[in-house]
Length: 163
Image 1 (cartoon, one colour):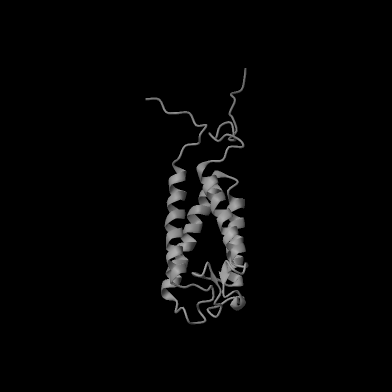
Image 2 (cartoon, rainbow, N blue to C red):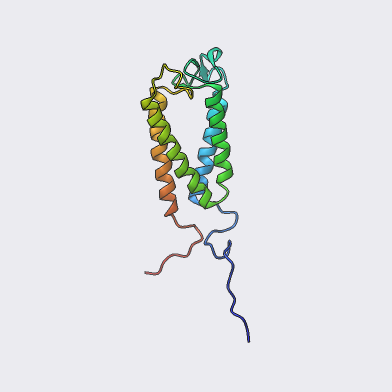
């Protein structure tokens, strides 16, 4: 008497083609690359104005990425870590969505922080300015939306439903 075969979850049964990235993975990878570029850009004179005023942290850092966004060594390091996390978490569809939604929630918290903190106080250790606040709100909305939308996108290898 033959025992029933119960396939183990994996690439053959998950609807995900090995080597083929899902939309969530592609988006998480793209955000990871952009954050890495932003983190590196914060250390490049010319891309960062007032580079000679770049400090480790705090509102005293007058360095401005693209002349708009306040940066510090800590701020740039956070962008680099966030980028590396995006690339690492883009390895699987679930972790890619977690990165997008979780990252979006982190940026939502940063937006609220930026609204509440006095930009000229020591509490502004990140540091942030008005341009950063709007960017953080935009990033939060886009990352959360893409994390949710890509969760509903079927894998390219998933069979189409019958009509």
